[in-house]
Image 1 (cartoon, helix red, strand yellow):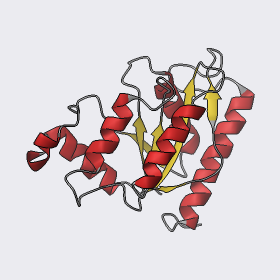
Image 2 (cartoon, helix red, strand yellow):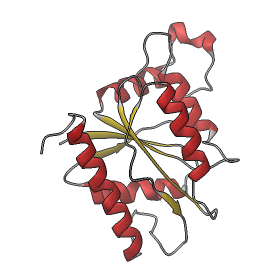
Image 3 (cartoon, rainbow, N blue to C red):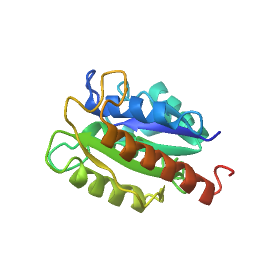
Image 4 (cartoon, rainbow, N blue to C red):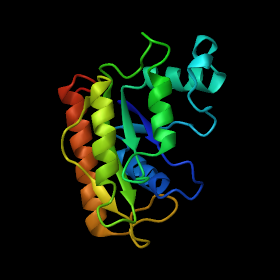
Length: 185
């Protein structure tokens, strides 16, 4: 079963994208294993530290490298990805020549309470990831407008329409991983 590392770009304990990550993990089982990665202990990227990587950075890079794919779940901060998400991306590229992103299968999704979900953040994120060589799933795109009645804190989807959207997204991700050679039919 393919192992998908999940990077939630929100550091907030009651993160809406954390709820989304838990919901996707429940819907993905048993076809895919979605594992959240810890990012709240990463120092802010500083090139002065790259010759002796901080332990949390080394751990994160090992976890990403070991995963079959990465699911980037992003909030939208000022029409872009969060600083926490950008920090993960930057550390993943360093030191030069050790990027964990090159040819790594990836997909993006996110939720926010704004009228367009995380459309602007995902557009920016996808642009950055493509420039780093992440092999991105093109479709479907999913910009979830969060409302309290959609899912609970544990990730149980309580809205039938959202359950269908997220199930279709997971189905597409599983099929795409077969197409890129990560999983078998």
